[in-house]
Amino acid sequence: EGIDVGGANAEVTNNGTIKGAAGILMDGASATLTNNGSVTATSGIAVALLGSGKNIFSNNGTITATGIALKGGSGVEIVTSNGTIETQGSGSAGIVARTLGGSGGQGGSAGLSLVGAGGDGGPTGIAGAASVTVNNDITTHGNDAEGVYVPAIGEFAGDGGNSGVGLVGFGGG
Image (cartoon, rainbow, N blue to C red; front, top):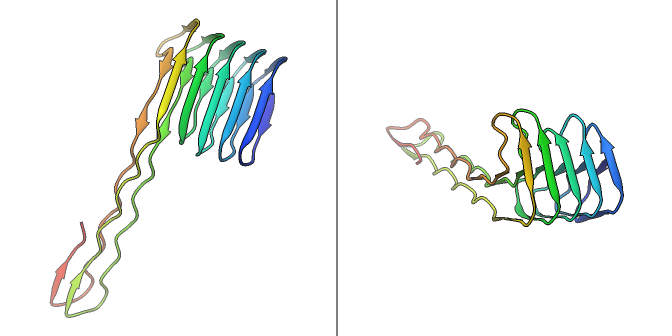
């Protein structure tokens, strides 16, 4: 990779040229990245903000990728592109600003009792917000290569608990 940044609340500004198999990977809790230069990825993702917190990306330069140009994480995604983005290859999206909600917890089991009732599973998490603003060109070359793809995915609720062993049993929801 050109740059790999971990840790919480990382901030990176690129004013030069980054070229490699992958460009910039930021995998901390929250990330802020400003690209004023050029990022080229020859075989992977050009810019990946994979933090679970608030990810902010501003592109004022040029991003070129054989693969996905920009991929977001699971938290709040804010993307502004004033520069150009170009990708090559099947599935090589220009911007993927994905947000994910967490899965619900498992319900508890009743155990051994005369009347057993298992606990309810926990509720699903809510996917974070995503905002994408594009003020310049995104060019993709390849099958299934979206210019901008913004999925917000809520995960599954938890399973209900077991009623255990008893004369009367009720499983959780």
